[in-house]
Amino acid sequence: MVLNTYLSSPALGLDRFLSETYWNHNDKYPHHNIVKVDDVNYRVELALAGFNKEDLTVELKDGKLTIEGKKEEKPDVEYLHQGISLKKFLKTFRLVDTIEIKEAEFTNGVLAVKLHNNLPKEKQPKKVTIKG
Image 1 (tube, helix red, strand yellow):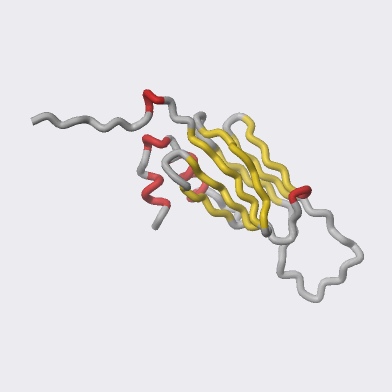
Image 2: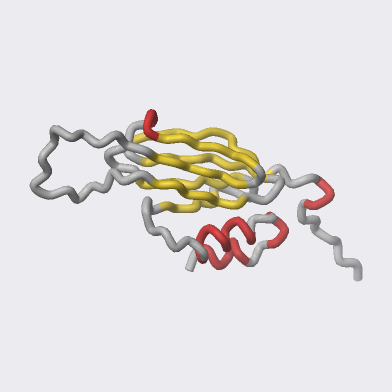
């Protein structure tokens, strides 16, 4: 499983973020991915078919990334089958103090929130030379 490698990396400071996001989410809607781009950049992706960027809000407050979606219902539409859910949602992800949002982008029904870990130099991993 891919996430296990991220969960075991306390030097990045993301173990709590990934753990709570992946293991403790009871709500399955909307589906989401957490992508490790490199050692300090991450991306949270949400599948949001049927939504427009105007229907979405992304906020970082008190260490929580909150993504909310509300779509106005169209009362004049008669669905014979509605397989694309347009229900409102609220997803919250706890972030460590060193994580900041770089940008949010909505393309082809996927919201991508780009994150950057500004780990202070004194907390970054160091290679130790072995003498001998």
